[in-house]
Amino acid sequence: MLVPGFYGTAHNGLGEWYVQRLTAVIIALLLPGTFVILLAVYSGALDQMQLLDLVDGYVGRMLHTLLLIAVLTHAYLGVKVIIEDYVHVAALRIPMMGAILTGVAGFGIWWLSVIWAWGS
Amino acid sequence: MPAVKRLRKSRPVSPRLSVYRWQWPMLASLGHRASGMTLALFVPVYLYLLTGLTASPDDFVRMIDWMHSLSGRLILWLAGTALIYHLTNGVRFILLDAGWFEARESMRFTARVSIAVGVFAALCLGVYLW
Image (cartoon, rainbow over all chains, first blue to last red; front, side):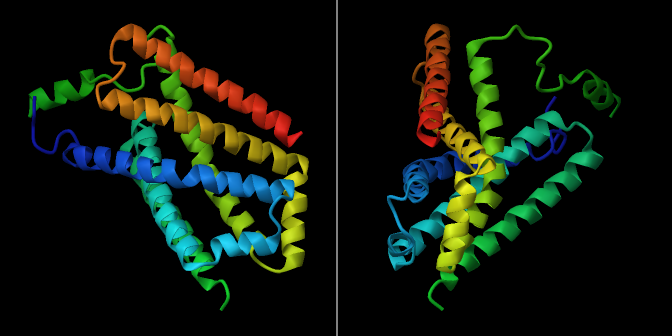
């Protein structure tokens, strides 16, 4: 029974499915290296100057920005799917998604401001 | 509209964990969600670390000390394990989308591979961090 609108926002599904996979590929290329850098800092193999050389250049900032957009989009879509599956009360689910969207946007702004403020 | 109302009542509610028998692909899928949630929760920690590590030399030392504390190691271990599992199983999901390993047996086998990689990563990272 395909009543238009009855299945909620299902008409957005294909686009979100595609964006989830596109961002997954970007993250798969960029995030493992980022975690290795974090472990290198942890172990002392990278000192602060060497870390800043990696993240403070234009290439580093661009890749970091691309990574953060992909990560936050991917996380938002992923958490959305989980909440849509487990939280069945719309009055609870919709404010939850609103709060998460606001949080994701806030972290995005914070993250961008950290990356682009270095050296200023 | 009455038909719609009846449909609403009988609609199956996902996920029906109590209905299906536990299977490797089901465990892999649940693990994907759990590791994804863990990684989403690591975003604030990452920002905290990024801010501190790139601030003054004193802040850098403070962050390194925090990373070496018990809670720091535990959080790094959790995030790293979640990352490696989520990456492995994410590649598996994309291959499934592309039509690879779709047969029942190969789907169960690749689910076991994902979980084995996750467990192996947890052990290796645990050895590295302690």
